Length: 148
Image 1: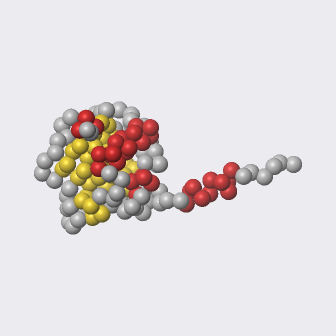
Image 2 (image 1 turned 90 degrees about the vertical axis):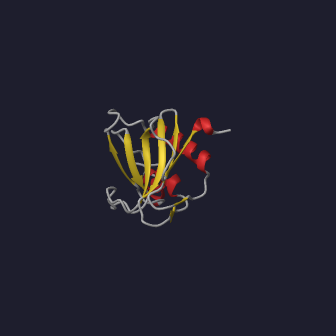
Image 3 (image 1 turned 180 degrees about the vertical axis):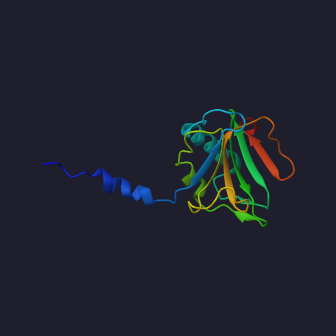
């Protein structure tokens, strides 16, 4: 007689605890494999330290970006009006591995079937951070070396 599996009932709540975000990764520049889920967790933590844990309100076409240790995590508003990040969305997003390929990833924690190429949305960014990212215009860049 086979014992009943308790794994299914234990994992079921996790499957429905949060909406599944969609990630889209490319290997445009620089080419190579994804930095990995562990790197996502690290740079997310840096972003939260630099910008705070509260949901961010971002104006139209604005971005908030954190760069540290060669990694980047950011939030970009493609809407024509200010948008406030939904509470808990950033934390939900990082539990999903943007595997396996691509050094530049876009993701959202909204409905899973929404298209990432839709410019009218709030989009998370993750990937290899380049030194060419600087604050100016509608983009604010903070670096871990900026922490006091």
